Length: 293
Image 1 (cartoon, helix red, strand yellow):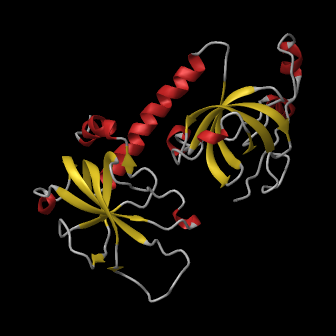
Image 2 (image 1 turned 180 degrees about the vertical axis):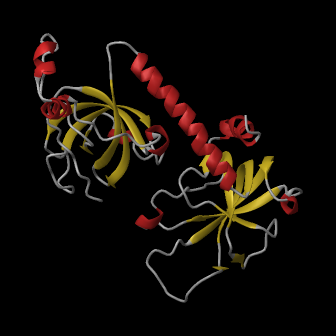
């Protein structure tokens, strides 16, 4: 993890009830005192923490300067936080088991005490038996639902922007159903090395029900072949896993591989990153974003 510098500011309290004393001070000393009186500037949040965050959750601080898992080092900036409500899990389907558990948060600044409740916008630091995240931004949770509603609105807008970026990057976007599965002997760009991180490509035959984006050469295809990693190696931990009968919205890239097996479509597509296979009910939302609305 990249080391981050946490700045501690010095604050001097000046009474506003005695302006004559301040006016009588020499100008240089007055400026110095006013500089000290200004509250220390907190580290500015990223341009859009809602956009950049992998994991957003409501959490309750349990212990400061501590960690929930021995796999990460404790420091003055780490805290044990109980994950109360998961607002954005990325990768999806992986983090739900952490609700109600204690996780480690590397805080970007102070201002918290044990028992405090907040909305944490974070990036993944470590994920295994435990979860550790790095804080990007924090929002207080008030007695009303306003803070949560505002955070959810920000997340929804940010999720639309993230999906729009993924749709723009995809070469073919279809709604479909997996109707076949097979292993494949595939060849493609290689430097000749054998690695334990080999993806062990599988091929899924997807019956196209609706086409939202794609090259003209694929326009007439009723089925497309989609590659995905079959390997359980850590390098492919978050890759989509397809299975027969699965329906979804598929954001496909050109695989750059040549199949040794015959099948529908001369094109071979792939999904190998989180977020490339979504629920089929996201199709109308994707179509709206592709229209730029």
